[in-house]
Image (cartoon, rainbow, N blue to C red; front, side, top):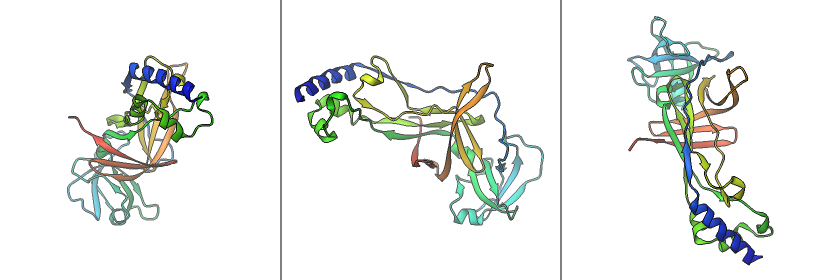
Length: 254
């Protein structure tokens, strides 16, 4: 069995080193994004005079238009103490806020949406894809018999992530397509990638959606993932999804 496994691994190593991968990032221009029913998020643009106690802002619509209203003020003292102010309150930045249900002059949460924009990435490693000829072997036994070329491939990181742009446009980073072999023929596998194309804020949470087109060529949300904000700084984003927290670093152009 060992000799058969070694032959299989050697062949797989040749296949893996000869096959290429291509990163695909597809940006989609959304036709229309409206504020969802039941969403209590309010929007504005930061004005001069903000500090850890108050935010002064010009009220704006969901789509970022200004209606001519006078600046408004919300108390953010408790939000600041509870680490519920995400991003930096700089003059001119757009923000999304949640008012306190009992006191309309208090904000429970503030998100600087301007600071969300950019490419947010994290690194992933592949895992062993178990095959029928490896039945009965532990991962350690398989690893001990792997050719050097395959052992090296198991240490090759890929960069995954989310790109968030203005006008609620998003796309996924790290969508790879194999060009010479199918996934079933591969000995290693990377995590699957959600192909996000839209981001929105709903009641203070980030909604990332995959879009599809129906028979009438109308866009609809095929699926969505919801995340709570944990941290947002100039170079770090931490989101809490249903399956746990994920940290991202901001990818900058070199």
